[in-house]
Image 1 (cartoon, helix red, strand yellow):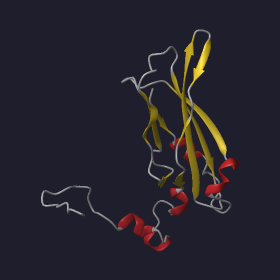
Image 2: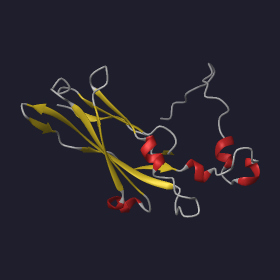
Image 3: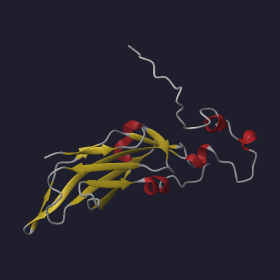
Image 4: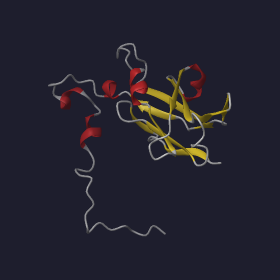
Length: 166
């Protein structure tokens, strides 16, 4: 029996962006009342303070294709960053996601062993870019180069070459 993460978010992303964990079970999905269970823990401060956060428990039935449970945690992560900027000590939240499966066998439930994700960081984009709508962002934030420096397009051109790095 295989139970694993098949998709995890970027190691650091904006809390307002999708924060997706997908899990998959290869054999037990057909069991009665099969569910994927996820436990999300979010905390602030330092990476080592993981026991001081809040935990949410979520349940998902398998997708229509049958093997995958998809958890988008962005609304929960974003809702934890609603304190006023003046009182918010950090624009970074840390999160960890544990998951296991559960199904019914007769009159009792069978629960699988949990799998644990790495620790991920969610940045509060509203605190990093606090400009009100209509303000001149060039004058207001030191982080504006993050939004302007970089590729102008996501296109791949025919003449792009991949170099052998050996």
